Image (tube, rainbow, N blue to C red; front, side):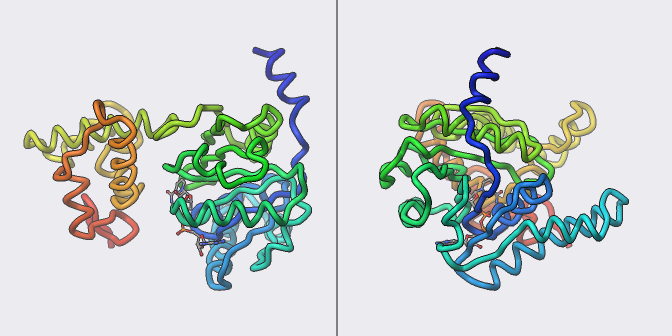
Length: 295
Ligand code: NAD
């Protein structure tokens, strides 16, 4: 394995300058993480208020670090200086890697990736942070699909160690090795997985949620399940709280993707707790009400 890792490391392109497309929850987090670990990053969005939100998020995280004594105003200035906001594709011309993190919509993502491909050098690596869209599908519109793969971060980016590097059927080894190296440089733990519905994490997580939904359908109390999973089983969060953090809209959508991908194993009822909460606009922490109420 050591020899293999060494070989992959040799193959990797040096990532000295990155760009993220989309300055939302994920794009802002990715920009912060890249900048704070020393890789300057251009943050591109379609609207100035969105860019401001992305930058504010990075500032908030840095201010917290200073308050906790883990950073200084000088370091904060340096990190913020490593993030260049822009509304213009021309700015991404010389970057080594692009992380696409725009809205989770196949047509929007395909259009954004095809457009950005026209603005970058031939050896720029393109990645997508999609949670549910097939990497092979997104690669279809690209002229050079071999330089494309998935780079799936988890929310909140600065806290979650894992990054799924998703190998499409045309992704070349240099692309995979370079994205693995970039994720490591960002202080993350990359794992390389094949393209399939749910990639790795959601293939483990959603059957767990399905088990939880089944218990609720049998009359169990969600907070009692959370208590057992947290206090007795020792997990940091129980399933109900985790679903509130993930967002019931996100979970509802991912459940549908998993059901389509694995109809025998992940059949959808349409009436489970996630469906009911979603249909009642209880989206979790993002709108202050899900399984639990937040103020
Ligand atoms: P978000 O809605 O917070 O942000 C999306 C951003 O994309 C917005 O700022 C929007 O203005 C921008 N955008 C839209 N069209 C654009 C374009 N053409 N060019 C540039 N920017 C554009 O969304 P998010 O939660 O950050 O999710 C982004 C991606 O990350 C999605 O693919 C999502 O599935 C994935 N993801 C989300 C999470 C999560 O928990 N939120 C976790 C992992 C992966």
